[in-house]
Length: 226
Length: 274
Image 1: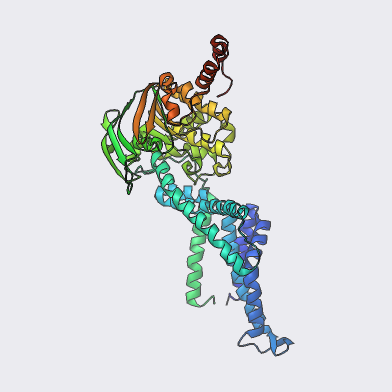
Image 2 (image 1 turned 30 degrees about the vertical axis):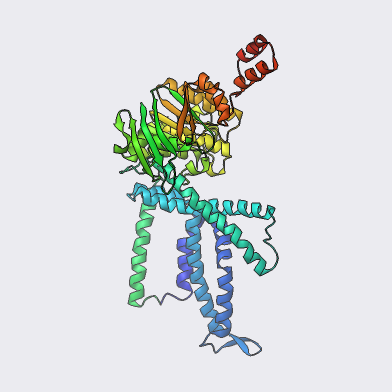
């Protein structure tokens, strides 16, 4: 049977590391994926190495608890799966700007309004962060204490969160008017200035991945994979 | 031609109307300025003229607004948008928030209108050229200064090639150089037959570009006429509107007994900045 550590490891190499190398983002991918995975990886390793229910072959004993070979094997298996998943997500984030994805979705027939909402949601995050930074600075200039003990910090959040949310809501009306004034509500297709190139190898890769997904699911159901 | 006939407008939940029985006409190729103290109804007039009030803003309107002879309310908002553009004071909220370059931001309007790609490109590049912001094309609109964003927002309006333009404080965040660019763009657009309504505190700008000026107070038109006559009217100061520099200097010189000939020669010299 193919599975255990080998399955996710192979998948990670074939579907994440190789494409990342081809896209020239391998180093960034490894760094980001490891950083994203680190907290959960530590807890997975510790819990499974020391508390794996079926562990018999003791590797090391620390007081009343023991690290087992079975626990280590299981932890590595889980870790490989987590790394494959976080690697795939990171690869997507590193290679696909949200605006590019949205333009391509719109080209393929997704409603411009839906595409706008998806894009605006992503683009709104840095704007909100910037607004929060400005409001924090303004509130601190007026004597708000955002440092010190936990209670003091919690008390300091209210005068920051309030203006951030209310300011965003207040902007909604003017933004709506600006969009209306720029014919955003016009029914029908918008003109697209550009769209991402879609080469034959990319089309083949998409179909290949789709077929691979179906094959993996079938193998899993058939018991070839566990 | 844009016509307001006896228009009164009240925001939803407001006790008093923000516009009262306003009647005015904006002819093709004409630039009309709107002045008045705070809360006089300047921004509301802009929203009503552009068809956004009450359609998008809510509230209630009486009277008639006609755009090229058609009732504004009979046109869908996107049809209005193709004919009349509106720019707001705050440039940050005018940007679409979904584009990553200034070029795409300026092209956003014509793209929505569904005009051919070549035409979108031509309009976008012409708008960028008009405001001399071609060098900002590749920049992220969200990372620009307020003044730069204002120019981008105005370029976005120009790219839609509307026959009429409503500008609410278009130079609020601009330095003198930016104000001059907008002033030149407004004059050029009017020469090409577009009618332009500008609500603006900078009376120097209005004095340099407007054919006519309307003064509002508490939602009513209290002064209306040729730009020079309205902006030189002493009642304007009583409304809390500052007079243009040239008029103020003349008045102060006259009050202090300075010989007017010297002053007229100085004022007749070409202005280098607004």
